[in-house]
Length: 86
Image (cartoon, rainbow, N blue to C red; front, side, top):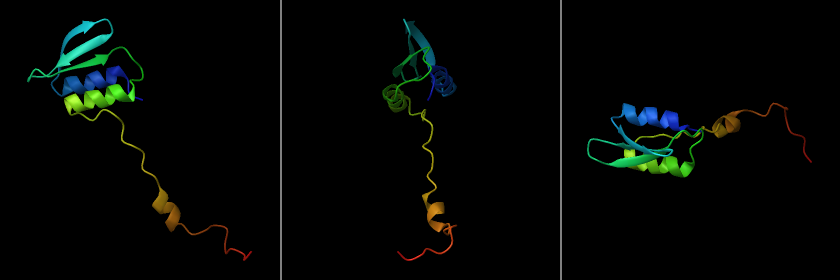
């Protein structure tokens, strides 16, 4: 889960500037005049908000998916010894 505070830190570090706030919606824009809105404060931003902000800013905000260890499980020999026929 990603909080609005973490998102704001990342986009301001990338050059986005705070412009205005209306209620809990904080507005940011970059040097080209492109704007994005982030609800703040929010502990867990929805996936829709994160995807929208990522598209506008071009910054990866979601954590990378966990890698599965399927190959390790296939390569590992069976620890129970030999299988008995049915």
